Every structure is written in C-alpha cells, then in structure tokens.
Length: 223
Image (cartoon, rainbow, N blue to C red; front, side):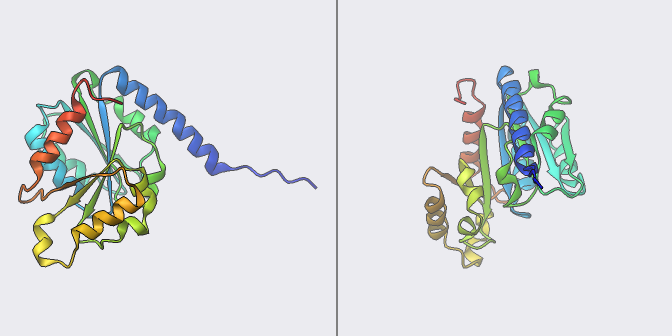
C-alpha cells in the first residue's frame, strides 16, 4: 500500500507568503510603510501606540491594525487617540495574525491618505515570528519586567526582527534587570538588531522612537 503525505503546514505557510507579497506590493504602490509590532503579552504595545497616535498620528498619516485573541479592547483604546479608523482583528483564539487578515483589513483603510501602517500583532513570542504580514519592518518590544534571556528562549522572534524596543524602562531602578546582558543576548541571536529604550508612561526615549517612525514613513525610505 502506498501512503501519500500532505504537508498541510507547508502549504498554508506558502499561501500566506503569497498573500504577504501581495500586501507588500499593494502598500508599496501607495507609498505606505508597514511595521509589524510584536511582543509577549503585557509588554506595552498598546500604551506605546496610544502615545504615538496622540503625538504623530496625523503628522505621519498613521493607520493602525490591532490584533487580539478574543476582544477589541486594544483597538478601542487606540481609537480614542485618532480620528481615523482603527481596524480590529479578533482571531478567535489564534495566536498570531496572518497576511489574509491584514489584506482584508486594508480594504477598510484609506491607503491614499496613509503613509505609515502599524500592525499590532497578537501578544506572543512564538507564533507571530513565522508569519509574514507584508511588513517592511519587524519591531519586537522587550520589557524590563521579563527576564534578560528572552532572546535565547524565543530566538526566532529576535532572529526575524529588525529592531528591539526595550520598554517600561522607568521600572529599571526597582528590578534586577541587566540591560547590557539583555542586549548582549539579543545580539547573540541577531547581530543586526538595532535598539531603542523607552518608557511610554514617563516619555523617556520617545523622541528616538518618533524619529525612527518619521524615517520609516519618509518617501525615500528603502524597502
């Protein structure tokens, strides 16, 4: 008897990559830069985006897609800070966003009035690392309330990232978190990583984050 094995995961991932390429081309045709913002739960993605929208939402023509497992709470929080539509994607239990969901979300966003698209992925350091969403930049938030060895425990997330944003730095005086060690572990996994350190609550380091976004959204920014 002959057995034929169907690699379902490989076919699903291949289809996602095709859709991600379509998303990337669709955004490039409109001059839109997409940033895939990822982290573990509670690392501060939504708080960072709240402050970002309040300061730069209109100057950078910013749109947001907010992913969550069961609620649209994060999207509701973000919508307070912008007059634009915040597109919520509720995955119904899935631990990541995929390119089809992002492509569908773009149908409801005025891309002609958008320069920067922020995709707030589901809080998870495993699943989102494997799924291309058509983004130009991958940014991982790494909070000081986590252990310094997160990059060693979840290497794929950091291998695939372009930037690491160390968050909640205002808590450093109260925690046994070694920033140098954390950054060393990050570079051990991915020597190309670039770093920012911020406290969205206190405002520390936000100017550098804003400058990164301005450069990303600039018409001359490379793909």
